[in-house]
Image 1 (tube, rainbow, N blue to C red):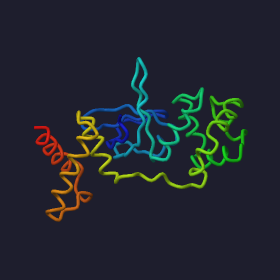
Image 2: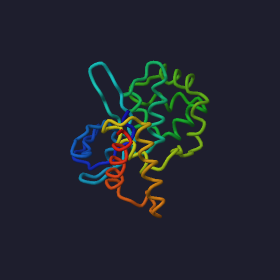
Image 3: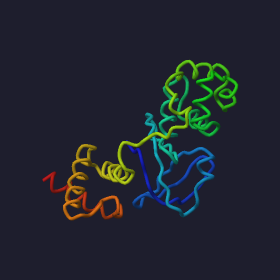
Image 4: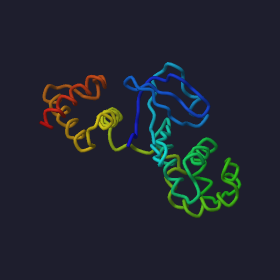
Length: 204
């Protein structure tokens, strides 16, 4: 599962970005608000959700973890797929959606393209109580530092299991700490080299 990527923006469309990561160009579907906030040639960090279908693998990207969490949550509502979920996030902020559902404001939700009145009613019914945090504008807190998530994501994409990645990163962090080096101050590429070496030795 690709959950985070950091790379250079190589093309910008209204509904997708091409991000170069480690020599590969990944096509990531985004909403227009996201594409308007990024710059060609700039580095970007995207929180991603991989949607697997029989005939396709589609990567959806968001500038913050809260939006990705909401994207995945609204798809639990019957009849809402990833494309509609993306348009919901394009039309309403997480706070606006949380407030609309808490206040049962059908009018605010049915304005979203692809939802309609019945869809709005279904969303309120199925998500009521699940979005209370978002309606108060609380940020979704990540359980580990961003650099560690990026490193884990890079290792998993290279064929390591999440468990192996975690063990290799922990080995490197403790080894650096014994030399009084803070891993969070190091370049990600350097950490990746050290972690790969550590992971290979532990694999035998």
